[in-house]
Length: 267
Image (tube, rainbow, N blue to C red; front, side):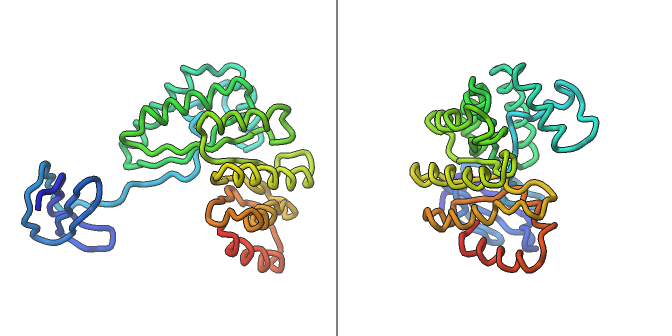
């Protein structure tokens, strides 16, 4: 058997020790002790652990490595962080976003992180971040799987051009539909944004990843709408709810109904 790569004497996360792992055409084809096989490349593991790569399922690469721009977050709160990002956006350049993102990708890969899902703000009509991160995605493709989410940071309805900008971002190649219903002006507009965004995803055959109920308000229940709409539009297994922090404030009776709904929807 000719292998592309043979790792000798490695330990596995399940506790198995001193095995050899053979790779061919990018896939693990054999795992056994004392493997007798030739390989184009051989690495001696010296009983170190060999594991699958790490995955970052929620990131904001357009804002990475921007600490102190335009100034430090004095309160340490999410709301001030969003305010600072709003102040920084007019000053952003394509080159700066791309440079910071590429530096982050190098840091990520050096730590064994080979897959990242990053939200990218689409409320800036220049779509600088979208274009920059699409270039980064293509540049790092040989060694890092970068998935982008069209994220209407300032609200799908609350921000004047968010809807048209989001559609443009998807046309450019962003592959996941994002949202932030709890940041809309009213609960009703938040609910309507969930429906509209999931409809866009269903029509285009895309996945959904929404910031949902990122507050301590027990009445912020947009994840319920997200789960229901996912079922209605046939999006089961393609929808993610991120930052469901309001759930810790909800009463037990309501949550006892909510969790089965989420399970049914695949959220």
